[in-house]
Length: 232
Image (tube, rainbow, N blue to C red; front, side, top):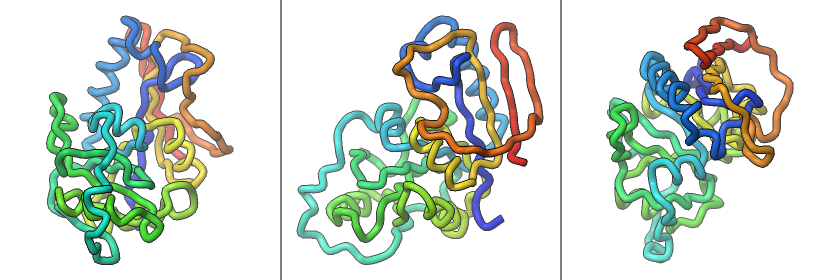
């Protein structure tokens, strides 16, 4: 395989939602604990999130200060900040909006702390100020269209440039859809919490498409169920 193996690993409500107030309810505490336990057991080389999830969970609300780098010349091509990191945070942020403060994630959770950040961006169509900012603070970036057929190219570059063989796809709904549509989700790992969500909460896949999976494992933890599927 010329790309990393991709496992979509998510906590969902009974009705298949992955974001919303239900996640902060007491009914989700056990599901969240199991989610992180399974996350560690996979022993992946890193994780993938879309811009909104990455910004809300790890980077804060500020955008990257592009305006400070408007007149900075940026060499063409991808930028490799740290190819030898032990763990990677792959951010699908096509317009380079996220205002990272460091090229590593700083998080209390040991499963995410010190992950080297790799931005997947649009490439030549992107404001060069964003690329200059990422270079300045040592964030790696790869130019690739993040919404469809070039996702496999981005994944190929991740394997070739960083030696990444296994990644956990951890949402949100839009990036999950893009990966499903590109046919690169190899495995589903769904921890189902014993609660339903609100009608406006986002589902596992924002725009779903037909794909066949085979049940590999199912396990019950009191009221929580873990379902593990592999792609047929």
